[in-house]
Amino acid sequence: MLISFEVENFRSIYEPVELQLTAVNYYKEAQHQLIADGLPGLSGLKFLRACAIYGPNASGKTALWRALLTMRNMVIHSGSYSVSALCPYTPFGLIADAKEQPTRFSVTFVGGKTGVRFEYRFAYTAHAVVSEELLAYPKGFKQVWFSRSGTGSDTVVKGSSSVKIPSAVKPLLNDNMLLLSLLCNYPKYESYEAVWPVYEWFNDELNLVSRAPNALNDFPYSGDIVAGDQGSSFMREFIQDMMRRADVGITCAEVETRSMPSEMVEYLEKMDFPQEMVAADLKAVVFRHEAARGAMRLDFGDESDGTKQLFGMSGHIAEALEKGSTLFVDEVDASLHPVLVTEIVRTFLDPGSNSKGAQLIFTAHNPCLLESGLLRRDQVWFTEKDESGATELYPLSDYSPRKGETVLAGYLTGRYSAIPVVPACFGRCHEPERG
Picture 1 (cartoon, helix red, strand yellow):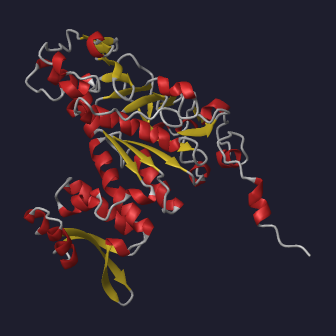
Picture 2: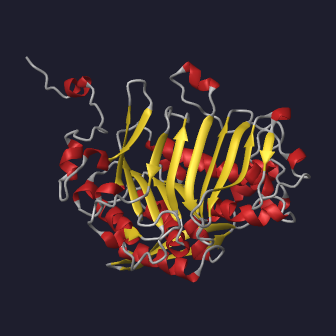
Picture 3: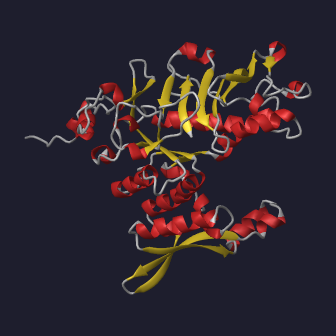
């Protein structure tokens, strides 16, 4: 379960911004939507099952999504970086001094399989991780499990009674590696078992999905689940049920194995690709439709963008619900009808369909969700640019909205800011000719 995420000096984000998934205790509506975890040290606090982020184009919604994705990727992969590999450093570009400052990430979460609250943070430049720290709260009190500071010969690594840093590991810690990622490459050491739940949360309990038009390939993750190569029977049944209920005429999704087209075989042979690649079969997603004149089948590529996007996302939704994990979707409403988006969000909010406390965080443009009364007042966040062009992130609760307030009208009229400024030329372009 994600509790908070903070990022500084990353893409359009300059000053620190923090996304909080702690519920506002003052708001008493829809209590059933909340996760009451009873965490040691956080008694009385509840947490959100869903969180929406709205704002104009280029205001930083995707930058926040990319920041958490970058943090996740560094945790999973930096332990195997070559010594010359660069860190994924993309500082704020509109202030010259930002390029001299590190990017900083900080996340607070609960490891689903341990029930322990962790805080993990690090800062880095293009060439080096300059600081790193892992805190744990197994009984509600802070424990510093390890810390790391400095670079090169000045690097200082400190372990603890909970996480002992083997002397054999320290010489292997290159400047561009995270200590957490490196430790998880050595299962024979005692420290591995201690830090593995942290790594496992990033790897298995945090999923980030982009629904931008160019983000969906011809054989999405959902296809592997339907084929039985990934996932579980619950996930397969969920995908089939979701596609049938979406009112797109689909009765079943299937995966077929097909021979590679001859022209592709010829090309691969001409380019001297390995024979096993040339001889490989291709998998294709096919949808069965029930039409007025009988059943028919359509390939994935022949379906509408909305159908393809829904199918592509369905596997990730099913996985989150089964694991009780956190799913962060960028542009959740891309090519989807608002009713479908509403039902997806409702699935996460309803304890009946989300019994394991999965979380859905999403960015969106379509404001219909603000009108439905589906979301609590503390589940809505906004992004906008300040005078320097940097992203600001702030919650709807900063405006002290009244219970039952028409949030949609307030948003569209600019009460909460976070709406685009329409250039004057747009109006001039549509003025009728005179004379």
